[in-house]
Image (cartoon, rainbow, N blue to C red; front, side):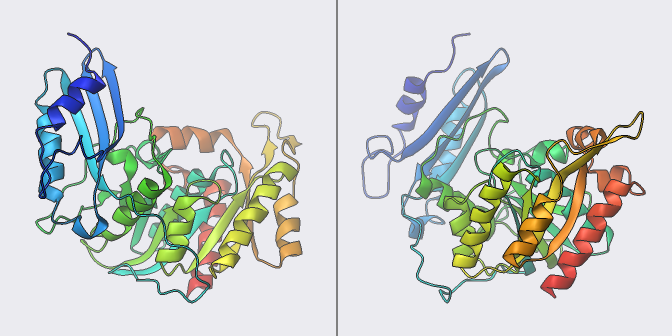
Length: 354
């Protein structure tokens, strides 16, 4: 079977006409086209850029595009979303109006200044710790470029769409979960510009029925690393109860953590505290402790910057194994010191947002 080409996809999409005439390809509405050819068939994903005010009206256009591509010989999966070429709103000071998310009492962002510090592992274990304490919890994977929650929670499939066009979050371990990873193939690259990221984050916040199975006490948001478009969208559009910053102890990570703190302060989002991840390593065989990435840097930085220090999480192979297996350690080994550390941090965060 011949591989699916970009030309074949675009030729098929030329059949789709916009309400005011012309096809969506000629009008440059097709964005971020990604094709993954494999022996079993091709996985295709792309976005259709539209006027943000017409999102609901043009939902049939999105569905039609998905249907057309799925019927191409050799295509076994397709994901299409509506996005917008509307630039993210500029910051206008701390008092810009922020619309709450229906049915969500508190929104907490888990952020980091750089990648690779364990932010997603922290987010998923904090979410399960909140749920273990009896709270109704949602978990939004807002890392558009590198969504990890489908793997960390062993979740597959696509969210259902209600009659009102809102997506139903996926369910796992008493969590309501949404991720871009449910909408695209796992290995499909997200080659998107800033406005598309802004629109995608907005859709996952506003076009998801977070309260479909009851109002949420807290929505944990796993943010992308850094201080880019997704972070600004979240900080400017949602009344965040606060942000938690995850860092490893070494200086290079703390430099970026300071930038994250400064960004949240700039947009008037409370910083609930620092978490030091990979704080130290205990050898499982001899019990010897090694400060691989130094130790105590996040605590010292928190003290220097005047924000709470929430706790430290050691580097432990069990954390990696449970994450890869799709069962957060808070659930897989609830009596372990690692799980108890996350539970203690979750309790501090919950008290801070009340």
